[in-house]
Image (cartoon, rainbow, N blue to C red; front, side):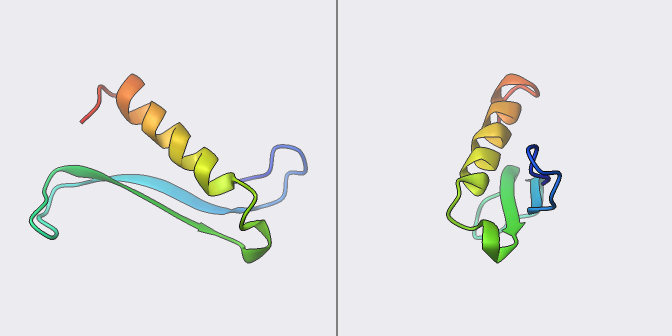
Length: 63
């Protein structure tokens, strides 16, 4: 992730479709993120999560 206002690197975010069984669940989307500590508590992870949910349901047809 890059801060649009400053161009500064914030961290990583990703959405992965998991096909193997994990804790008795299979074929699901896993959302993950790793942010630099100085960006914690500023809503970047939440914004990423909402954008990922929107993408899954409105761009690729849900789960």
